[in-house]
Image (tube, rainbow, N blue to C red):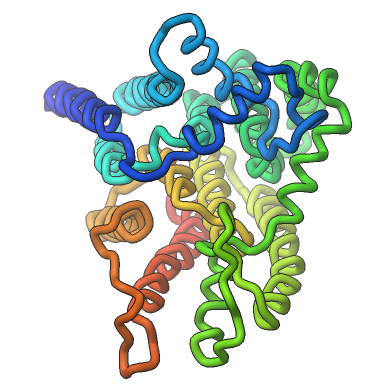
Length: 413
């Protein structure tokens, strides 16, 4: 029966990815709008960070450059080459998860993998159109490596840390997860006094140098350009803070929207106040997460293999959805970040499985498709725009998932 399920999932994945690859988005792609432009800028001699503004960390540069190199060598075109590259990463990640879940004889894991295939197929317009799959798969693969056995081997631990630093070098956002990852690396069946902290620090440092030494040597302080750019960005139209601005503006009519890509930010007195609030709330939320993940570790009474995995899942899930709610930037491809975690969730109870999968389905349908789209001119009671009420449904499940992952370790360790 398990072999049949395995073959069915493999066949479903192949069919899904053929469909996704052959049906790119019709109207817009970051790959053609930005990535190809960056690759051509570099090819003609301008250095990222040093000579032109570049918003992503250095490990993204090879991902954006390779498709053009193949194009210039006579293999394909930039757009299809980029999508093929992400398809390769997607396939490797899928096979990696499948092998892990099959060896564990995890039926709920196979259910999660099935959900991952279906939901990423629905989100096809964003799956191969950015860096998000490479970014999130790197971290989740590291979680898998640390979960493979009771005491991970030196190679597995080093590989997990390398994948973590790789994720930070694709997008900086995973960096705060260094704290729970550090604790998880020391997660052994022994007292806290015997935990090899020095060994963990050496592994973290060596893997950091493996990923970051060359970029730091090449770009040095100019890497700060990415931070300056992202800190200076306004509140993006799709974020939760922007949603608050829209709600208030429904009654005050004091804000106007700046129709300039990529942020399409709102401008006005309410927007100014919300921006100031986010500048305080966001770092406090990250600090609260770091304190919570630390307290959660030291509250442990046993350090089992199962507890280590649930700790890593709980901290990653909580952090991702906390970002979604408190950060000033949110985009549709961000939904890929939690979908890569779905196969690892312990969906053992029917009600939990239905709630988690249906909530993720709602988020994906609302944000990555036009299935539930509503025209903005329709208003409820001639006051409330229906599209604003619809967009509120995007954030209710996000708050629910923060609560779900805050409790995940307690209920699954």
